[in-house]
Length: 324
Image (cartoon, rainbow, N blue to C red; front, side):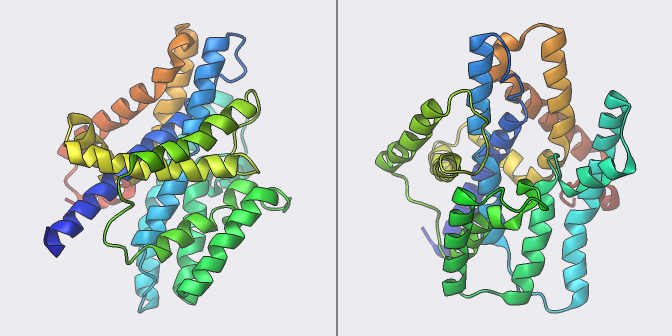
């Protein structure tokens, strides 16, 4: 395989892994029945919440791996930041209006918190902006990146919620090890090699910690969940390698989702909220495990529709879609 084919293969791996990560993030927002009296529904929600731990760390890893902190001018930096901020602000505003209609009791402060990611899905974008600015100005070398990885792991294990003035989800220290590892991994020509034994090795802590923490809150950090998040992230990347080898229908759809992951991330919450509500109204929570399938299919169809009718790149930009 020549160097150009290797690069195409690597980008395909990344897109499929991002597609899997997006599916994981959707799982996290569909596991809303963890307090249900029905054991089966509660168990399904618990599984979705655990699987939901894998996606965001993978996004931070790839964001770090693909981010080039060589910004030559302030204009270039401003343009790069706007490419995230504009679709982020627009989607957050639309989704907050949807929340406001449902709750009928929200304030401007609630809106600001929502956009920043305090008790909302937007936390990833807030932290990404911080990382982009930070890494552009310091351009850390490998030794510094290694220290950041160690710092992030230790912090997420023992101190993730100790700074009371900064909510854990928008605290960069809780995510910095994933982004830094991506930066450190930039020069690799391929992702992790396929190895079934290694996959089995990383599944073990997920199963063990999942059993030990049954009926406890599922969160990205702490002495158990930090290891689950890391192990699950590695598994997603390994699975991506198997998926692209087989060239299946599902693999092609995952690649499509990965290529358009910003749109899927920005807009999936509306369908997740509607799906969760419909499952309760229709009394079909017994199939909670299938909620992510409904949500991802819905967002996929909406994207295909919008992609076919929106030609103007200004509107595509605002929606978080790729240019024509």
